[in-house]
Length: 462
Image 1 (cartoon, helix red, strand yellow):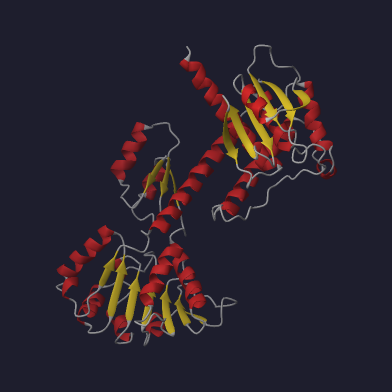
Image 2 (cartoon, rainbow, N blue to C red):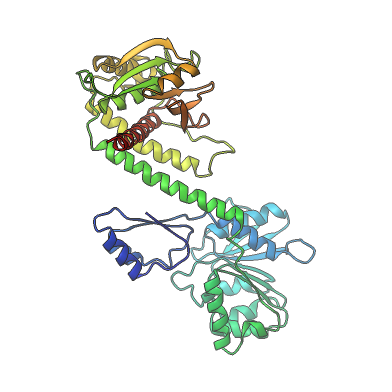
């Protein structure tokens, strides 16, 4: 796994990475949107998967553009032209409309769409000359794809109002040479340009080579690197990368689990097998017990809290609904969809390997599904005890073996691994759910964590 910012990922980097990991599953994540500095064709030929975090910076860049479009008194111009209707353009239009009930927005979109139900104050045009005719406030947020390079020419600059302000977050190559020369001698037209430091340096050298060094313009240009470098934007990018890492880990867990049999064995675990205890007999507790029995553990399942244990509950949810919580990431609905998708794959494999489990609609709506799993676990030697363990008892038991709590409500809300009296939270109560798809993935995750920990501990004493 390699996480990169705006630096160039050229042939040398790609070749060395693949040589150092000749058989590895390599995944490159661009912390941001643009992949212009990544040699995608070479990555593909070397079997390197590439991902990015599209749309994360859009709201922050839109705030930047809206700020620089404001007039001296802090108000927005009544008419604003937006060139580009990608993630940034859409976010900008939304913010402009929300900020000023009188503002009108003209959007130049190469796809020539209709405003439809967006807003009566928004109009879409395809003709650039028509859009920029007399424009006094222009936002440039086009990606440099296709014919966008050098698209802003002298004739388009001259169509704008003499006192226009042009706020550009596109790469400077969107301006033709004669457009830059025209801006250089314009008495009142101002350019506000934001891009990466390297692109700004190249822009300065380019204007100097054209004989119109940006430092000599009649109306000084404002050059910044602030649009996507605020602390809030960096935090959102970190979160987006975390989501990408989570998805990679998720698919890895599912791939490894699907490669093995999920058939609950008919025989008991051997007497010298490692032990694990589960607190909670709801669907999550049962799935935890199932995965550890498949890993040849001796499993004991204890009652959880009476109100939230899941025992006696009739219906079982097969898929989870996206949680809406101020403390959760904006990508949570997307993550939930991914969890449901791969969780359903595991659920289907579980049913295929254990055909006696009743997963019909009637079975899921009644207690038959839970009873079917419980029956197979009992046959496999899993011990179910009605005993309730308090926090002190759980801590003492965890000094001898791993303890997994899987219950809602109370001091041990969610799913935790308790080891040597220390509780390690795996699933927070805010996202805890009695759902098969999530429960299966959580059970696979807990199994892998404990097996890895056990292997490490064993190696230390050898």
